[in-house]
Image (cartoon, rainbow over all chains, first blue to last red; front, side, top):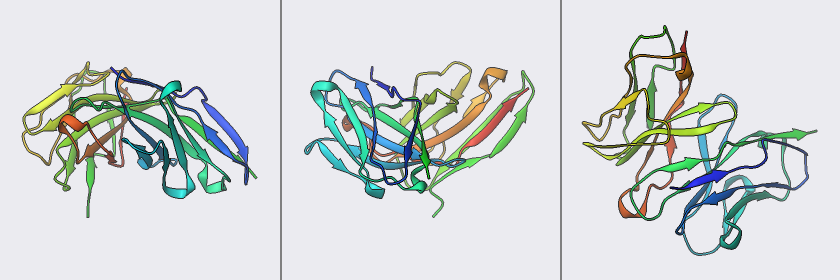
Length: 114
Length: 116
């Protein structure tokens, strides 16, 4: 069974600074990997996804993530954050081997310092 | 374009009461699922379905029942509510299933349930 760890519960960065949110997964085969964002009181929106191919994935809102198989990681990055990026971010993993489920990490809350 | 519709948005129950959270989608998606979201726990999968007549358990299935009689609907039933089931519930669907796994999830707006 797959699992996801997001080691950072809460991160605060200054507006304009770079951002990296960490995600480690556990899965025996090639996983499907996702990053979702949730604004307060809202549902979740997909930022980007990795199924196969190029390990650097571009998403919406200027986000990107890099799949590193050797480190079992899929960290999310953004070169310069905006105040509107304040939200909760979830990493998720899906099994590629069968029709099944997507498992989410516990989330990282991002605050932006003016 | 409704997408994924959850009802009700808010509900207060007493311990032991039963209720059904409704989820309807108009995207013809095969895959439907229910998650609960609790502070510090992220989203935890309760049950999921890869098509009409097929359901399976997720990470935290105890206390919940599901059925999938049509492609469009995937209700979540609480037979005897407990305070531990106080949570925000999300229904999510995906158009990809089968041997390639579930793809991008599309979420409803959530249902906030309080059990007293």
